Length: 438
Image 1: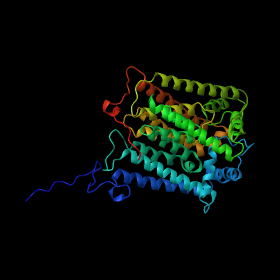
Image 2 (image 1 turned 90 degrees about the vertical axis):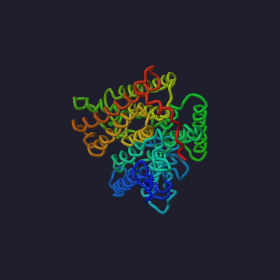
Image 3 (image 1 turned 180 degrees about the vertical axis):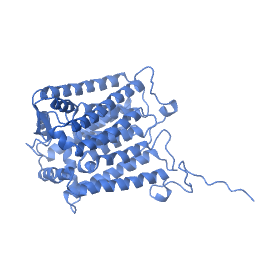
Image 4 (image 1 turned 90 degrees about the horizontal axis):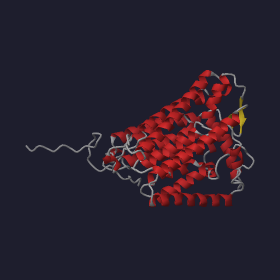
């Protein structure tokens, strides 16, 4: 009797009887099936939270976003509205629900966010898994798990803000930059016109032709979109006036200082100001100026890093993007809960590469996301009125973000600039080239 050869199996132990096909779930590896199952279950909960209509983010979409949609539909930006503080490209996000006229504005908005979330999850899985069911060499599924697990920690918030599609654009731009720098640059430029920060994702491209292509494509696409929007709508630059008037928001790093000061007798107060809850009182302007100074310092450090960097790996563009956005987030005069969506997305991209130096940073971001949900919505009223419990929560959250930013910058410097790269990945990981998204 002739012994039969064992049936080949994938890395996860399932029979490999045929090719791995995305269109046939029966051929998916177990990890892809687990990710899909968790994603569906967690997103049903998130949609349910938003569908109740009682959550603050649902009210924001139903009232504020829909109000802007009606104004934009008439060919003008919300001129004179101090709460409109977004670049001209944000009009695209506000008008997009009109593509689904058979749904209410809130329903259409949530459906579009859900689709964006699903596509982003699919891309993260795609860049990690090969068609035979294994993991791409030098890649990891940790990024896909980061996105799947971290986003629901913000409850229904991701589906009630337009930061999700902006983050998806920045993530896709990063993934495309190594193999298609022009396309990645175009996506980064479009994202920058919607919410500015995606322009930072091209910072870590290696010197040479790819950098020139990516940066040029980003600038040209942003300029072209701006020209189109200025032609179609009136008042495209009105948002700059509102931005100049912003102060210190209660959840920012500077706001944490004032929260502690208020508990110790500082006479300031919290009020609705330029579209957010800000501190008003003595020394607030000094704190705001200090935040701007720190932002300038962060920008200078990033330029110095760019000039001094000598070693690039497959992970460097991803690591640099996370570092830069973290630094600008921490030093901003405003840190809204939805900003954590940006950090989740960029952390997930870093975790798709085994050679990334930012794994500890991603863990700190994950912890900060959890604390953010304790802050908002659980302790938010207490944060407005003042109290040691709420103050401790926001200080902890911002402390985690500050630690993450400092650690991220340190690791990026060591792996690319320092003579002895203590955190440098193994040589076989550094040699791995990019994995194409499609």
